[in-house]
Length: 147
Image (cartoon, rainbow, N blue to C red; front, side, top):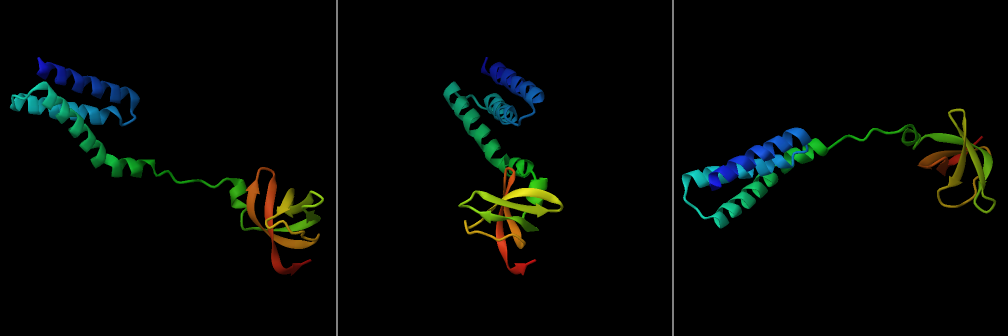
């Protein structure tokens, strides 16, 4: 009777894996198949069979972790905003945190800007973009560069 149970569980887990393609049921199917083989070859009690199922399923998961990690290692594609980090811009309106003001131009586009360290940066200065926060650029003064 237990042989039938493990055979049915193996098939059920395989069918579930086919429909989900999430690599979850596959390890349970392998564990059920391992338990089925052990049950056919050895006359072991149900408690031991359950232990074999749990341990073998866990072993299959652990052995497949490198494959799972490799598959999950998706490369990050930079957005247009992220591509602007490190570029130079020109301050067209003084960046002053006290007045909540500051604008820069980058590639012909006008942006709101704030100073990275909170210090004012005069109009005409060349700055480096260090971060993009929504529609604001966080900038740092390029040393020695004034227009």
